[in-house]
Image (cartoon, rainbow, N blue to C red):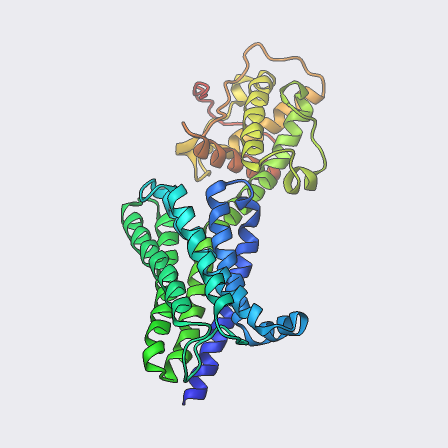
Length: 389
């Protein structure tokens, strides 16, 4: 039974280690631009490094290179302790409370140095570990210092994550804080288990320690992956929007080049490799489409104006299908060299009062534009609505 539990716990720890590295690598581009995210990535990466050195195959491979298992163990503990320090520093930056950062840095540096001193002054040993029997290596002072650093950092982090998650009104932020707090709680449980193992030495404790560390890795990875997944979703939405706007935007700016800030490029280059952030490119395209409509409306007579199509599902928001067909007629007339009409139509060219509504409406217009083949002429012309925007 103990062997099965140990094997399952080891599997969970392997999964947690892989997940936390994947989350760090995915978050790295954003972390390079944001100081707070950079601190979080450093904290999680150093914790991941310590977790990696805990893995049997990795520690054995490092031992073969360094030929010094003792240094591998010491590096693992120092990585973990440094991660605890970075988490505390990040909490001070985010909350703006606690002791002055300079004082905390000095105390942390002294504690890290004390770990090295305890290890260096201990009797000769090959590993920094707590064996099933005998005194902890390198010393009890070493382990109590290490455990104290982790428990102080983890307990503070759990309290802060819980407090700020209750205050946060944003779902993703609250979810990220809760996941990070839960992951940190399992890390704290790991170190509490070590603290109990020193006097008890039960063989069941190490088996569950790997399980707790694995859950810590999985939950922290999920926490920092939430913003990454949201960014990926926004990027996909932006790509989809640009792809759907592309035919309409291209035809309009080619017909009215004066409204375009830049000349249209290849479709894939515009959508997949835009010349700037996609959300700003989308906004620019909306402005250019709107400006082009203001010019092209002179080529649509009032009796062909975009009155609501009775068969259209969106008459209450301005008929996107009718507008698309009238734009087809306006483009045909302009490219054919026909002069503007004296009684020009007043085309609807906006679907709302904010960017989201206007984007949605013009995407509907672009979709209808791709399928429109001829202008639609209402049987009973109606008075045209005024320009919006």
